Image 1 (cartoon, rainbow, N blue to C red):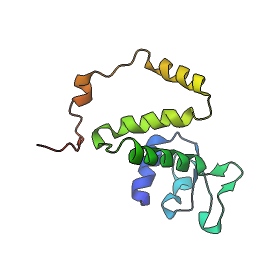
Image 2 (cartoon, rainbow, N blue to C red):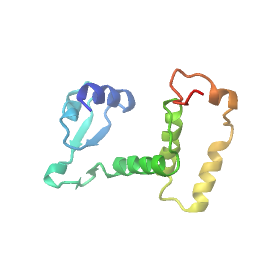
Image 3 (cartoon, rainbow, N blue to C red):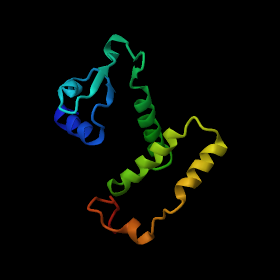
Length: 135
């Protein structure tokens, strides 16, 4: 990816003044100069630097690794239409990864309260492809 893609994404999804840790990719270099004033620090993987104090990319790399394993092992087809649902599922799993089994079950059930997904909404057109084969 290039900075024209990454920078607008970071600006849209990151709080003003947030600490942003990345690798040394040139696409991230202008983060510190943005109007939102991000505290941007990098680790330099090419110099075998992976962690410097609190600065690392291990958490996000672990998250994407878990999502990719799920795609290959369980969810063989993640359609663009529902991709956000899959990602949110793994955000929850990632955030609970250090909790015990019973606590994970409690947190999962607590998130069900007041939420339901009707079949009509599940199949409704949201402008994205379901990538379903037409017969």
